[in-house]
Figure 1 (cartoon, protein in one colour):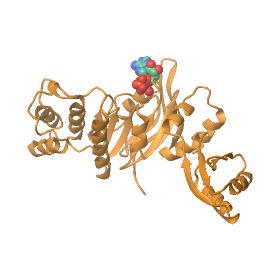
Figure 2 (figure 1 turned 90 degrees about the horizontal axis):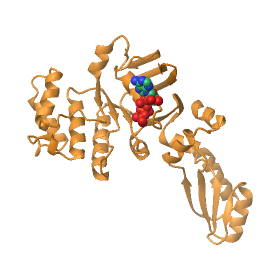
Figure 3 (figure 1 turned 45 degrees about the horizontal axis):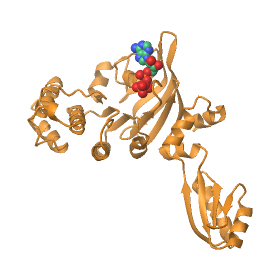
Figure 4 (figure 1 turned 90 degrees about the vertical axis):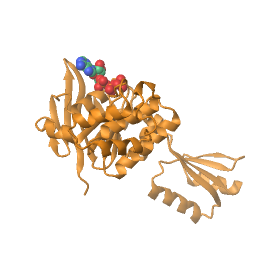
Length: 317
Ligand SMILES: Nc1ncnc2c1ncn2[C@@H]1O[C@H](COP(=O)(O)OP(=O)(O)OP(=O)(O)O)[C@@H](O)[C@H]1O
């Protein structure tokens, strides 16, 4: 059984009479990537601030690496690294000097090998001694993450790590994040790019108006929103018509010989459906499963008019 790196239960935070976090619960297994999504003002930064000991919760419990953030603050701080949207990089110093500063802050001695190793890993050796004010946004982000890694934190909070980066730099950051996880690091990621969460996260939670309205793997979340369907291509018109009769709710295109069937892509019922076609001797040429992307999930779950039904179903998962 995998251990929880982050365990949150009944977390509440209010500012005056504004309830920002209204009792949220989630669990992040060690060595996995968890992404918290939500519209602006949903409470993501507030959550990160509580989890990283910068802010005290009003109620609930938060354990990081098994330690309570409220009572074992120092221990928690020694386990975590935080990379913010606004990089901690000092622009008047070089990459090497920034890393040295971080090593000194963490009382890491000797630090030369660690610093050289990080410069190599992040491909910053050539510019290591140039003032970071001359760096591109991507290089600065890499340095920021490198600084977070000084001292080998077990759990890393990445707050919008690729905002403003071009697609190539974003992919470089993604592969570094994947490497870290492969080495056993736990990552808590906030991002405004749903594709990033989709690419990286093992599990995603969607925060809306202070509550978690859904949690699951990217695939589980995508299956919850309407629009998922199967596209079948059939060998002939009579087979197409027979298939359309067998599969209620389907719509057929006689010219293309295709059939669109509402379906969430769940393997067992998919198999049953295909078997049914086979039992009737229907010539199935091709099929594909179309699931909505995370944008659809996000819009549907964070819409103010979301039906209570979907919300309850989402929470139950
Ligand atoms: N110190 C504070 N005092 C009062 N209200 C605050 C304070 N900090 C945050 N809030 C309010 O709490 C709510 C959640 O803010 P938070 O910054 O956590 O949201 P967020 O999901 O991170 O948003 P964004 O995506 O815009 O960064 C907002 O309505 C915000 O105005």
